[in-house]
Structure formats: structure tokens, C-alpha cells
Length: 221
Image (cartoon, rainbow, N blue to C red; front, side, top):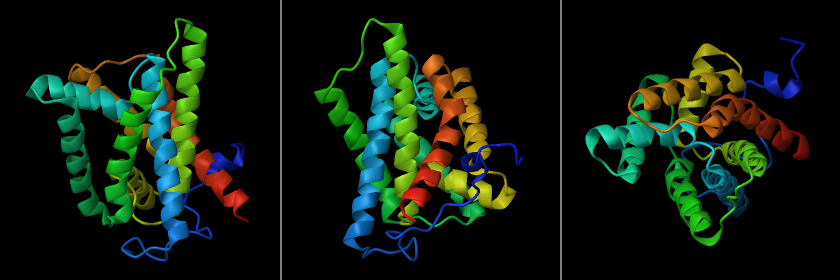
């Protein structure tokens, strides 16, 4: 795969100046905590941009909607339930949760709620909505690149990604794409709403995360 751009060949989360020396660190440095929250905030805002664009939900929200329809749950509870289910997959992968795992759920959800309340980026121009949604996917990737390098424990979905990458030794970009496609397929079968934004996220998030990790590593040199 030497013909691929360098960032698409990245296989590991790099260690940077703010990285914690261990995921199970419940007294992290202020700098580490700052970049963790910054990354999660960018992640949440990127997700909200995709929602604002009204061109399709991200795969995990499609899954949550499908679960909500079939089990008569709220989407919020369905997202919580799917997060717990994903954490169960961590056990055979020997992934370790941490402060980042908990803050992942709280900060991302809070940022999405605040963004939906304060802003309205949706327009009647489909091309602009497409650009907003695409930029949202890039922001999610950049946010992932920042918060994963904090090494305070990944969120449920990113932990699944890094765990599978370690076991399979495939590049992070391709592992994430496979996860997202599988999730959106299940969500769609359960009745979740799929659109062009869903496809953008499913196929774009892997390369976006890889680009985020690559840029963070380069800037930190």
C-alpha cells in the first residue's frame, strides 16, 4: 500500500507531549485534560454539523434510531444502550477504559445539545448543506486525532476501532470504515434513516481520523 498517502497508512495512535503515560490515569496533567476536552468538543461539534446539514445521520445515530423504533426507546437511551453494548466488545479485545471514556459520552453529548440550541447552519441550498456535512466529518476526525492522543481511554466506539486495529494489524482508516459500514447496515435494517450524509460519514470517518492523528503528530514534532 505504498502508493497511498502517508496518513492513510498510519496504524498507531502517536504519543505526543500531552499524552498520558497510561490510560488508567485518574489524575492527569492539566494539559492532557485540556486537549482531551478540546478534541471531544470538536468531535461533538462536528457531529452536530452533520445533523444541522439535514443530509443524513451518522451511522451510530442511524443505529440508535433503529433500536429506538424496534424497542420503543428514546434515541438518547438507545445511544446509551449501544454504548454499553460496545463496551462489552472491549472485553475480548482487552481494551482499558479511563477518564476519556467517561468524558467522551458527557462532552460529546453536551456539545451536540448546545450546538443544536445555539446554532442553525441548515439552509435550502443542498450544495451548502453538503459542504457543512463534509466539514462536520472532517471535524470529527480532527477531534478524534486530538483526544485519542491524550491516552486517557478512548470512547466506546474509538476503543472498538483501536482494539480491532491492534488485533488485525490493519490500518486505522480501513478498520474504522468497516465498523461504520457494518453499523449503518444494521441500523438501516432496523429502520434507521440513511442519507448521503450517512455515506459521507461511513466512508469518510476512517480517513478523517487517520488524517487527524497524522496532523496532530506532525504539529507536535
